[in-house]
Length: 256
Length: 329
Image: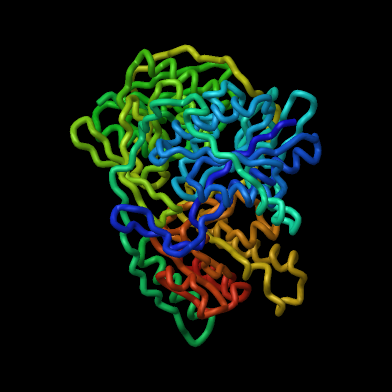
């Protein structure tokens, strides 16, 4: 079974991200594979182990995106493709979905396309559904577990209200949540293989896409209003007294 | 401006940010609420009472289960005839999925998880948190209809006017489905952290307390029981840090922070949570944060308004008792 895992590269979650001269700045912090996408890679590898086949990691991004792809390779993905084009600098989720759908078509005979549930940078969480819609494939979103039997996939969809069992025929687009299992650590052999891998770059022309134009655009980047809270440590002669004072303070804030 | 508001629900239970969306829509003029499903009359009544002027009701047994593809096709078909300028939805997984697909059908875009709107004439600019709330962006959608999903609790909920009603227009569903929903098991009952006004949350400190002489699992069970008692007294939800979720002590739907949920309660009580940046980004918009931690140096105290340095296993029962007494419960 041919499995495509769509990943993105983002600033590390520990990074102090600020708006600097209208640009997003993350200082010296590294760019890493989007944490949710590690679960997508994990899900792809699990299915390869069960079904056989191959896992292909795909990333839209600049040259640095190859590092995120190398992480996927080090985890065990079989191959990787970077989609790199100056026209991709300002795309929105619809644009990203068109590009990924075209890449999935070009790869050919893909049966599963797996996404993380959202990115930690722009956090739109739209791309999975939009890629599915463009491909005309069923979407099985927020999968906490995946079962493939013949040409049918069924997932346990983890939502606020509980868990649903949802099924569809392959090929299908999936997004996964953490219940899929902790992403495996890159193995020593995996890291060696990844470091030697030659990752092809595809341009939009190679995907047959021209005139990509963003519908959704950012007009301004803002630092959030700073939150000046001085913490008052409640003290008292006994824990009972502290509990009593804390309750009074909370009630005085009229939040209950 | 022609404004539609989609009322998201699960089995007839509305996501309350839908009502907040009606309130936002009303500030632009009249509002048509969209109610899709099967057996959803009570939502029609509620939509009118929260301020909708008209309701477009699509009632069909094939819509009994939410499936993004059928709901999106139904919405797209309505919008391509009705030509709304703006479609407001609550930020929920379902609304996100259907807006995403419908935007593809209609060649438009979605502004997601918006916390403020600026309107000049027909032009809408949305403000939304990005980078897990570390930054914000002003963003616009150049095409119509503009899909905008609103973060829960970011906008005021309109007052409900019992008995208020309006015109109901019935419309047909698009029922061509690619997926089937074969089963459902409800999550353990309790308030969802998305909608909660009050959240009591536990972290690593809930499972790590050698002085109790219990193993880690038993310690965590006891800790989350104490957290649950306070949460239920206050009518709030139970939250957790990633550490507690990863250790398997509580399902991931309770996880606050990066890789979990961003929440905006009025009151957030963090017990035994150290306050990693990944957790703190999830509570940036909480109104009042209280920290209870044994370690006076824990970073959670830098984002809390009030702090208590102490053992949550001793302190939480006392806090619950003090609330009981003061609230007369």
